[in-house]
Length: 291
Image (cartoon, rainbow, N blue to C red; front, side, top):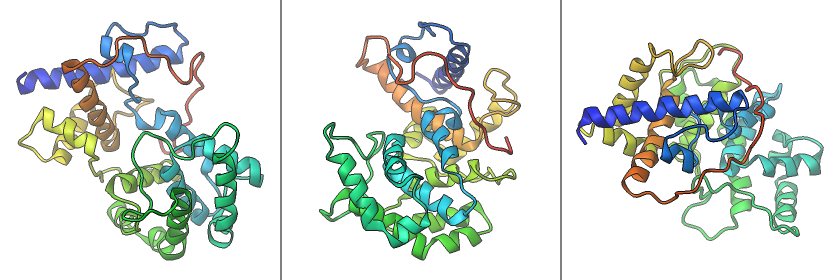
């Protein structure tokens, strides 16, 4: 395929995947698409904020900004709302800065009891690989709690005083256990909970997005591919949410999905219709106040 064909393939995937979201919002029955790849495999929404994992972020808001960022750090390490439901069930609320700092052992106990229950519940999502304390054989749950506690004690105040997204990202990334990918995810979650529109001009491409960007133009830096695509999407009426087009982080997300989409076209792995984890009528999405 030449670059133009790849770009057309990418645009078609984004438009069709967003059309599927619209169809599900109207409670249309399957099949939602005739695209065999999109019909048979799971792909995230093109607007990151629409995914269930991102929608859960709004449940973690709090009047205390330190509690908010502590929750977001620990949430993206676990990346599993059911883990948080278990903690809320045990505590009567989602963990606050007090639990992370003063009672980390209690959090570990709650999570271990949940993990070792009759159903052997998962604490961490399998969406991406997280190693809280790389290079060690430490228990993953204990390590995850330590990462969150370390961030609160050593980094949270600096994060809250930062004046730019780049500075906030640097603070997150400087925390042991939080790499580039995870730091960008946490920073994006933070922007969703801000009252005023944040600076959306900062983005860091994750591994999947880098692969997708290379398919579109291997001569450009991935972040420049993201910026060019975001500019092109600005005038496209087919891919909007409210009055907004795809943000840089949304485009980053689309490229990650495109890398999986293109791989599936070359070597299909699944030929049965995808069954969603959240079937039936879909809730109206929560959007940031500034959206």
